[in-house]
Every structure is written in structure tokens, then in C-alpha cells.
Image (tube, rainbow, N blue to C red; front, side, top):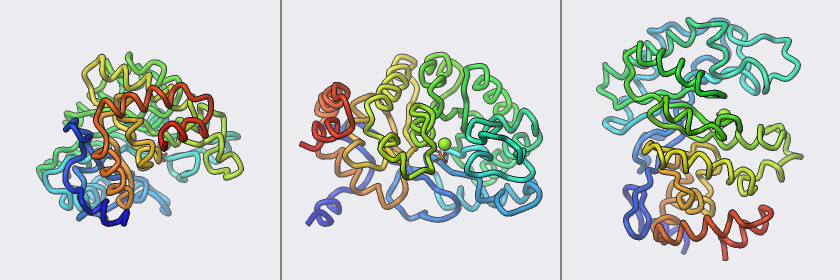
Length: 305
Ligand code: PEP
Ligand code: MG
């Protein structure tokens, strides 16, 4: 019965009263192209760099990105630059002797040591986008400060890329989202890492799952700070962590002011339905009630009834 009710909805994401919320996909390569979604909100590019001794050439990258761009036609694609390190160490990018790799030279920070890696990647993304006429956006992972955001934007623009953002997945970046938004065209909240760093809880340890629960009030507080800064700046604030694909949480995120939700393909129908069944005012009320909750269980019970 639920399946049938989900199938009633298709097309762009919106609340019952027509407030638009882009529903985007998280992809890791040229798959999932037929999904009814408005584009790609997170193209994880690590797949191309794994299990090899050297980075792929600019040409090889151009071809691989082009396959994804072709699949999505005129829909926008947000490419995330290489997020090497922590749970995804690469021999040509990361040191193997970091005592705390999740807190080490990972994500955007790798470019301090290996500037060519990022420069080649940005050039390949620009090449592929030009070839396919793609509405491409790029974003950097693991940005901590506005100065880093500014540096990334300068690099991306010098590669010919016009729509440039960063991920917000470090609490310092969330708290200073207004400064960061002054530098970029958009931000995207990586709630998986944001939880890990906010709660000091390794995201791969199942034992710490309760701390990593996306309904934790402190995580939602950080999301609210960023969404509010986005609203003030008039710039998009997406969520691309697992939280975005939770149909119970999606209306809460929208009520907080998030403008797009990016998720794995199977999550799209239920999130679309959850938004279509509520007005924006419902979402705002829900977000207010959820934020007053002292813990995840209370937050869920506000949202789910
Ligand atoms: C995140 O951290 O929430 C995210 C979307 O990126 P990844 O899971 O690839 O680290
Ligand atoms: Mg992340």
C-alpha cells in the first residue's frame, strides 16, 4: 500500500504548497541515470582513484566524468573533488603514518601537499563539462575555514569552472557558514562527517551509532546555523549525507531552511512523498518542535507523531 502511495508522486521535489526542494542523487560513477531525480548533488570521484599506484591522468578522468555527465544530460551535476584519506586512504595522496587519519591530511587538505592532483582533477572536470555541455558544479570536501573556501574557489575558477561550492562537514565550518558563504556559490552539508566531528565519534564504529544518529539535536543545531546563513546570503544549502535520505527527517531539514536533498537512488520516492504530504509551514513547525527535543528519541516522536 505504501509502495502504491509512493508511486503517486513523480517529478521535482516540492512541498504540498509548491515550495521547491531539489531532489538529487549521490552517485559514485555512471550508474543510476534513469532515476527520476533533478540531477546529481554528490558525485563521489574516489572510485577512479582507488586500487592504483598513481593518480589517473587528466585524459582518463575526462572520460570517466564524461560518462556521468552524458547520463544526466541537461541536469546539473555537483562533482566533489577527491576525498582521499581517513576511511579512503590512497598511496599517492596520503601519508601512511598518521596516528589519527580522520583528523589528518584528508580531503581538500591533500592539495596542500599535492597541488597537481587537484589542479588536474579540476581541469578534467572542466574538459568533460565543456565536451558534454554539462551544467557542472564542483565542491571540495573537508573545508574548515573561509580562507580555505576562498582558495578552492580561486583554483576552480582558474580552471574555468563557474559554479563553486564547498562541503560543510566540520563543526568549525558550520559555525562560520556565513563567512564561508561569502566566498562560494553554494554549500552542501555532509552530515556523516559532521556527526563524526561534532560528537567525536568515529563514523565507522557501529558501537557509536547512537551518537551518530542524524536526529541528534546538536547535529540539527549545526544544520540550522548553516541553513540560516544560507537564507541570509541568498545561496543554496544542500544536505548530501545520509540524513537527506531519511523520509522522516527530510521535512525537518526543509523546515530548517535546506534547499536541496541529495541521496542514494532508492531513497528518492519516499523522500519525495514525505515532502508532498506537508506544506512548508508544516515543515517549519515540525523543525521547531524537533529542535526543542532533548534527544533523538524525543525528536523522532515529535516528527513521526
Ligand atoms: C558526508 O560526510 O556526509 C558525505 C556526504 O561525504 P562522505 O560520506 O563521502 O564522506
Ligand atoms: Mg564526508
